[in-house]
Image (tube, rainbow, N blue to C red; front, side, top):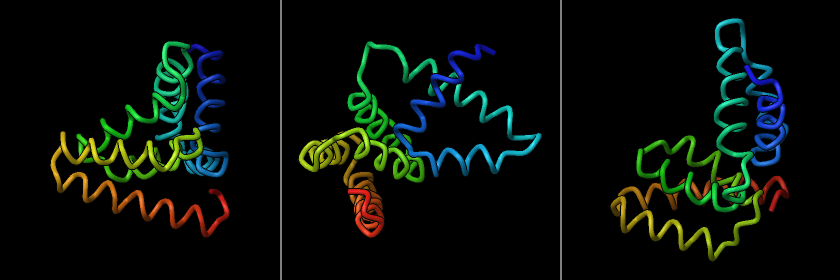
Length: 129
């Protein structure tokens, strides 16, 4: 395990998803699932999110498209919140969701807009956006 990648990955994960989310994920891990949290921090967030080839906004847009296309709507909601935290505007997010609807199909677009609305409502209730 590369400890620097793991630390840097966790830092980016916290920036994108928020401390509360990451604390719950790591704090809820046990002996069985703990190594998976380490893998997420090192590999997913460390390798894929810390290089300079793409910025966080670009990575968020890519994730939204891939998660919608693979029908991973729970993760889509988590990353939609992250996209807002990464500074994507309503116009950019709406444009991404329309493109998802066109390329992934209208049902995927309907579900993406439904999840997006739920996330936005939750964030507004909490004063996060």
